[in-house]
Amino acid sequence: MRLLLSCSLLSLSLLLPACDQTEPYPGNVCTREDRRTIPIWQKPAMDLLIVLDRSPSMADQAAKLAATGASLAAVIETIEGGVPDLHLAVVTSDLGATGVAGCGAGDGGVFQVGARCGVDGAFLEARGLVEGGVGGNFTGELDAALTCLLDAPISTCPVSQPLGAAVRALDGSNASSAGFRRDYAALIVVVITDGDDCTLSNPSALAGVVAPNDLEGAIEFACFARGTRCMPADPSIEGAHTGCTSRGDMGLVDVTALAAQLRGFVSHPSLLFVTTVAGDGDPVMVSAGSRLAGTCATGPAATAAPRLAAIDLPERAFTTDVCGDWIDAFEPVAELVRVPLSLPCGDPSWDLEPATPGAQLNCVNTLVDSDGQELAPLPWCDAPGVDRSQPCIEPIAEDHPWCPDGLGPLTFSLGDERLPDGVYADLRCEVACE
Image (cartoon, rainbow, N blue to C red; front, side):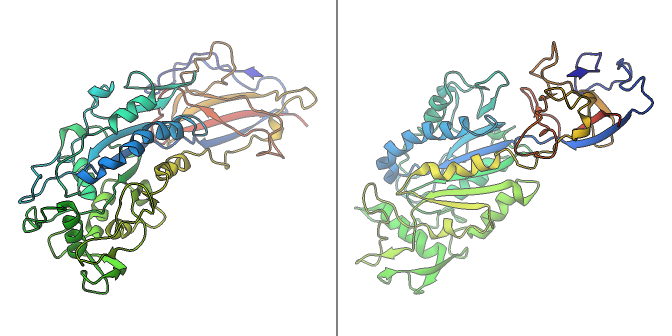
């Protein structure tokens, strides 16, 4: 493959008026060029916020939670194309409640301390490296760091407010969240709970709830009764309650308002994903008329979550049954960064010697901005002396199932860092004389 760049790759912050490039097409008068400007596809950056219910009833979910860190690491590390540009933080659903036994001020949506897990900072950063493996701001293996972050202590407060905690974690009121959200990144909120959302608009709304033998069960019923509208209308009637919607007029925040606040943290609705690990199905009242029945046939107890099920984000809200495999909740992470099948193909006329094995190309490739201004050369990745930690174009194959009628596909190695938004590849390739 012939390479026409005679200068080394410059920083993307520099332009190239002084960079000497050999003219690509001297000689034959029949020579012409094919020029294309191609958007560079980058794996989406992701800001993943995990909200853990750490109310007392979650103690019996410890084994599943402990296994989730390793499973999540496996999902991340086996993503096609390598580990994405990832920020990951963990908060608890404890925001406190006035007048409820065991509740204090709560955790306030503050990120769980990463230092105990070998994380240098308030949240974990990870990305795939060109030479393989995972880089980031943590020591040791990714699965160990994730398992440690998910090992948040059980709270004594029975009031779980996961959606409110997510909003509090992202609204800028906590210094720990500085730098976590990025405008260009997808925001994925994962809620793990054995109950429902009970985000309070009035901190003392549940102050009158007492139950010496099962306070958390009484709180769950109170949140259901005050935070939803179902059929039948009386929440204490025994049996199944169907068609539930969220409400916000009895001391709880309407889930619709909470979802709107989450949408405010992304520059476009398509960048927000909410996935919940919670009890599945309709709420069912048991004999006393003031307790919700469990949803799991076996194993740890869990109750239905009609408020979490009411999150209205078309094709952006996902649910996973807490009674099953929790790792299903993280599948959207893998789907977000799947390599697209629409990568452009090279033109067969670029091959100057079709009878010779391999693609014989004579191209000048440059990184440009949206105005066409040159930013840096874009060499072929297999050229002598190329620094693979910087952007380059992978060698073009002659035969590929994605491009049966051409060369390609055109794939880019973007090095260890993310390119700025609005960067394109400008390819000027000599076309063979006919």
